[in-house]
Length: 330
Image (spheres, rainbow, N blue to C red):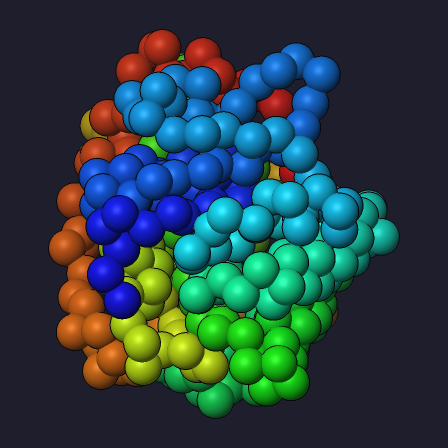
């Protein structure tokens, strides 16, 4: 499917990945509507500072409202559904909110897309649904393990989306990104947490468990993969991993960032940042074979290249001021 000239809706457009996706869709020649979460401050999240903010239509609202979703989707040819609650630690505290937003919100978007005959829905999943790897690399046939309320609700959301494909022929693609990082990411995530603490001159970096491994992907690569799937007719009805196929431990990651930032900062374990033992995902490494077979896609940024760009962005005082490096944000 050609995207140029299409009317495209992005939910969660005010967030980290969503704002980057919105900008790239504008560059692709799409007519973009961007959903930002309704708030009394009249802010559009990262879209407030986006160079494309005058080239898009921003709508504020909440995917938890089915009536709103039906109006939201009405004119869209293609929908990228990214709106979700994503912080794992907060899901331990507020699981009901995750069910409402992630599962019911996805149901509302699917039903709206069905009623308005949307040409394609790209639903965004997460590698967290796999839990600790039972084998590596992890392909799309790997068992799903709900090791946190967050991952449980994303498993539920994925199932709702795929049920609309099987039951009603809604043209759904489930995109399953592994850990994405880059400019604008939440300070609760490990890479921004390390970088902002070093950039603020903090002498001891506070982290949780540093032994797990992750497959990290620069945000521009994740966005490119999402767009490649939207263009691919053969991806309809499929679940597709988005990842690099490499893994690194959090401890190795810390040392890499410290080296790139020329820092001698010391690592300190913060008990408050450690997940419950059975909830911690010990290992994630992506098998991206299906993505390559369907789209011919290949990554542009290795880890060091992506980290250098990310460090550059977070080290700019104008950007770093958005973050509270000395406060643990769940």
